[in-house]
Length: 364
Ligand SMILES: Cc1ncc(COP(=O)(O)O)c(C=O)c1O
Image (cartoon, rainbow, N blue to C red):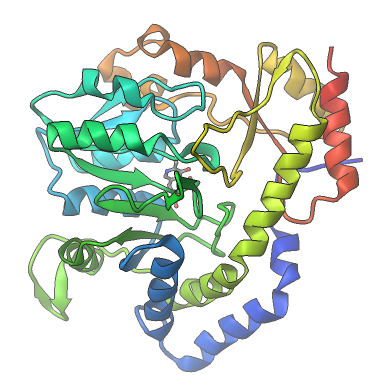
């Protein structure tokens, strides 16, 4: 029995006719960039995300980078980011000429909100928490720190579509929420795509200008912008994805809950959900002190897994000039050595889930 880490085809095939109809509709329309589909998707995604405005972009990295730029981030500024995240979070800060200031993880793999204040300096402009693996951060504590020090908050929601903290959706706490629709994300496109959501009309307007060469009116350029426009085909396909969001999130939850029920091995720590947080299970990351042996054992038994992330951003070559070490962030370093993400995808049968759980349970 071979179980991949992920496969995207079953989710496409579940509503294949709708995706094909949407793609052909755009092809037949003769209009391919910034049109009706993008506008409709922006309205629908804003409603899904619980925000007033959405601006569709090329990628999650662009969403983060343009959000920070719209908040005025530039050279000389610092942005507080979690030590454990995908590199894009930190790169978005660097792309604006600012410095990412890392804060260690808590036991839920998110930023340790209790340590944010230690990282605040006179240069801090913004806090950039990441709702990692699909679980919302402790946004109460993040917002208290931001309010106390007068900081902006941009949320990295690349992995947390639909996740909430105390009933309020991720992406709606700070000034702006940044989403990725990379195909493997819970709400995924069929290529690169991203978006920001906000309740601030002026901020939305700024990102809208930035994504289109800094212009509101064609050939009249007000600020140095980029080309980061969500195209019509991705927008149309994402509208179909969004229609099925409840089913997608429900399926992931069912698989995760089955794992939580079946996995029993004292060598393994199961993912924990913080009281007050909801988890949308973008990733099901267990921890194991002998992680590499476990990964090999699973591979020998036909089960593919992945590590999120083997090299945390503060140890990656791109930030080697900061001279940070494993001891700089002991919790994140330990987690990077121990985490292992199990297969979790639409179309996984009960038999597949049982096989993964039984095999993990057999690891000695
Ligand atoms: C936490 C996080 N932030 C940002 C990104 C960047 O998104 P994208 O790949 O769409 O640029 C990702 C996606 O991989 C991510 O996981």
